[in-house]
Image (cartoon, rainbow, N blue to C red; front, side, top):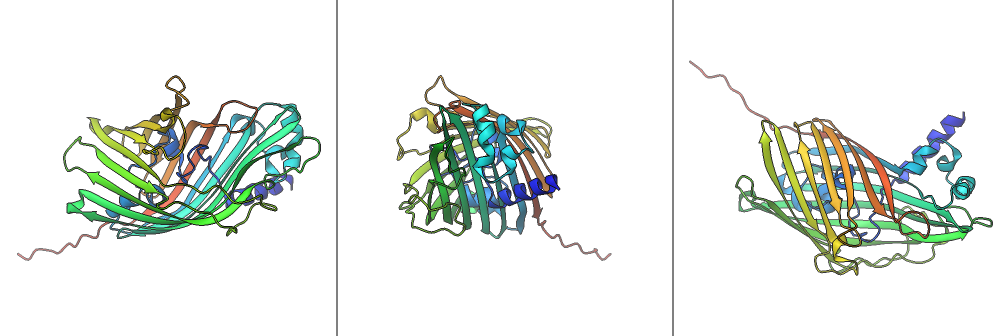
Length: 378
């Protein structure tokens, strides 16, 4: 019965779901294993309905036929967490069960997350819901520090093609319900749980993007997006409140602009490489180092089904790059992606960057064009 209890608790955790949010740049609210393996590149067009809906609505302009992602599930964590997977260290919802392991392994960061999303798209329009949560904790000098971010985001989006598809424009409206924060507690006195000392609120985020798809081989596709147009201002309340006695509202998010380009280089036969370059927060609305705004990646597609990926994210300076790797498999109905990547640790104690592993599975349906066939009369 113990294993059934633990499986049930894990399923309940995933139903509130999660991803590891980039600490300095929360405006990018959704990234899957493919994005993380490419250094965090999220803007260029993708065949993911959820990805386009959240990060590049102009990409929906190419979705003339019905598409559905019935299940988009991601699970991620670090090596400390996986080393104790299946024990009370991670299977119990209360931090009290973490106490022994955290204190026994002082200054080691424990973290886990997951995401559960679904969306449909037809003739450039899309609707879906993203639910996600991530958390980390570390024990240092008699204090347990922890951070948690949980989001539930219903969204609608559309994309339209212009100039025979050379220009594509899109818009998405995201209803952001967020519980987040960084807090600490005495390792001896508690309270123990990822629901105390957190901020909670909800608000609407307006996002618009444009893609320029040049009709010539090897020329890049240029993508631009404005996130949080007019700003995202949080109000009290949430669809799925996760905080016990919220400590206030999340910080309002300013409008930011991202730019990216990608291009394809064919190697031989069905083998090709796709190169991605992205610059986040182009006008520096957020006070961070210039190098943290860069992300780049390359996707080696050995066939239509199998890919190997690598990426690079800028760190504090040019001598602090963060590398990532991944692989993927896809067919008409299924996508499986794996990523190894790093994210910044905002907590006192533990490493400066947390190495994470993510596995993502998508169950999808793509309609195919109907071809009319008639027999010729002789």
